[in-house]
Image (cartoon, rainbow, N blue to C red; front, side):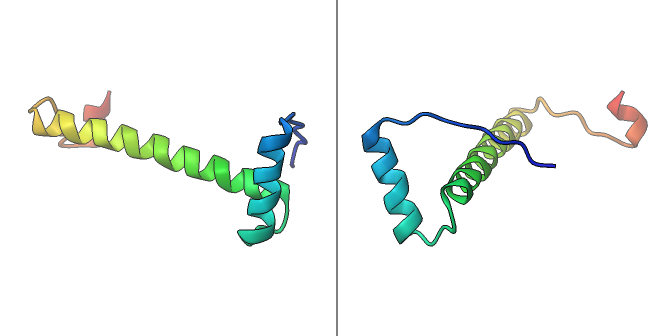
Length: 71
């Protein structure tokens, strides 16, 4: 099930959104914002993975021998 979310944009941002929809191959403004949110989630996940990688390199990682070790 989908929900409707309304947003308010200043004219300058609306102009940019309309241009991206027209030039960027998006089917609609909704699709533009869905893609924007997907990209945001992907970037957030990347930052989490980067942080975890740094912890591994710093020797702060825990080696799991089984799923029970997750507790």
